[in-house]
Amino acid sequence: MKHEVKKISKIIDELVTFCLLHGTNSMNISVENSEEYFKISISGDSIDCKDKRVKKLKQLLSGPRQTEIEEYYWELAGENDRDTELCLVGAMIDKAEVNYDEKDLSITLYRYK
Amino acid sequence: MPITENKKISVLLIFPISLIILAFIFDDTSNIVNGLYRIIINPDILLTDYLKVGGLGATFINSAILSLLNIYLIKKLDIKVNGISIAAIFIITGFAFLGKNIYNVWPIYLGGYLYSRYQKSSFKSVALITMFGTAISPLVNEISYGLNLPYPINILAGILVGVLAGFVLPPLSAHLLRAHAGYSLYNIGFTAGFLGTVIASLLRSFGLTIESTLILSNEYDLLMKIYLTSFFILLIIIGFIFNEKSFKNYSDIFEYSGRLITDFTQLTNFGIALINMGIMGLIGMIYVIISRGVVDGPIVGALLTIVGFASFGKHPKNCIPILIGVFLGSLVNIWDGQSTVVIIAGLFGTTLAPIAGEYGWLRGILAGFLHLSVVMNIGVIHGGINLYNNGFSGGLVASFLVPIIDAFKKEDK
Image (tube, rainbow over all chains, first blue to last red; front, side):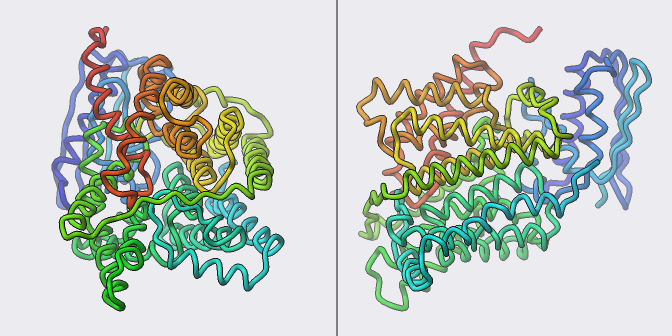
């Protein structure tokens, strides 16, 4: 698929923006590039997991991959410093695992090749 | 309980089916067939009102066929019924009143299909872009019937240019999004404006001129007001039922700026999105009545487009400032505020709703005011072959305004 590396970078950009906008002080990011998929893991602390938008995160990332949305809008991911494009990220990935632990948030995303 | 895809498709089917029923109530078969023929052979550049060219029955059938075929495409390609696909269906249904017809849209689809084959991807990945991309379909009619080219070269040339336009739209549209950063909702209008400008310039350089046109109806005003208002109320009722027979959480929608992509069917739920669609339709209709406008084909197109995009970013809080801005502009500018072109500038001007949603009502009014001036001057560049002229203008206004607003913004806290 075209622009694959850039798309992964933009998904990470979006998640980093989301965590920083919601107050994280420290975060860890790892990316696994296997033959089958890209696996992106992000964990951040000091996030208000009771915030409405944070609670919505799991639902928005858990939808099915939608190539028709990805093809049209992927360049918008990570482009704004005030708002986030979680619907778009949800459309660009196949599987999401989101876990809340009081102030800690961990997100793992899979994008199959 | 989650609403199934089939139920959502059923909701989308209501409007086209009602169009078919009304077409045969108000018109007869021979009138409809003759009207469809006139619609097909007419150059469709802005503004061509099919209600005038083909009559009520033929226009309704033209719109219903395009709508049903695209709903079928969504079902067949397994595209989810969400904010963007709803917007795509409504914009096609609406513009089938003023420029998209059962002949001129297919070359665009073929171009999109060939692009997907060339990229070795599925047609599904570009299907929505192609649906929106039918904005450029008057190009097919204009070259086929408007430039006095000899037969059958005219037909072949029209189809070929349409296919080429459909082929280049997907990469162009994705790229141009970054110019306005998602602050203009009709991004394909912006893209088709660029493409139309290049094509119109090429044609002019060979001595082929595109004549501007203004064909408008005024005889179906009351009927369309009653019909559309009933439909908007029906959307609110269905949304109310889907939302557990309540309006609860509707106000959540106001928390979103509307910037691309804001899918209310995911961010809230399908019921709330339908309620918002109905409310936005009613607001649009009130705007037309306040402006003392006549509901003709272009205004029907504009109202249905607003309704579609009310599932994908538009809501009263971010649209009303834009409408006020255009309305104020029409009071102080040289244009007639009651004319269809000025009224649709307001309705379609809500493409800039994310500016009001993100930066506040005052800047939203400014954006609307500016949009009116730009849209009234920009059509001449592409000669009217881009149906989403307001999308072209909206893209330019957003690209111009957002960096300036941002420059004056105080530092992030």
